[in-house]
Length: 114
Image (cartoon, helix red, strand yellow):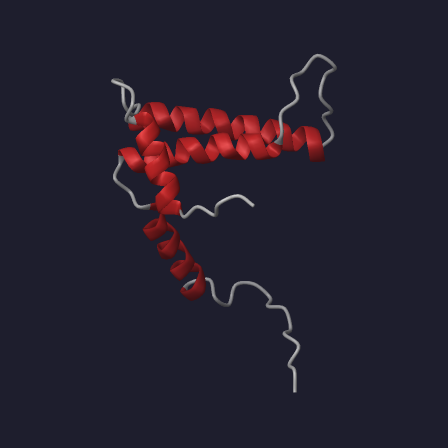
């Protein structure tokens, strides 16, 4: 079974990887362009697997998982370069959903065990 990684561990792992290179992190604007590029690649794979546009016979086989991983890597690079703790960012957004959006959606009925 694979080790379960925390967000902090993933951020450290990416930082250690990028830290090996003199160039370091790209600028935030360059990473935003990369993030957009990777999002487009994810959209393409989703369209191939779940949409109406099948792959061409000569297209390289990629997976949604691979594209999500690429997107996550660039997102972590962007967060690291801006000194953003993604655990804190996650906690903030979950708090927002639990408060501002708490009544926005129809909740499922929970079976009560007596």
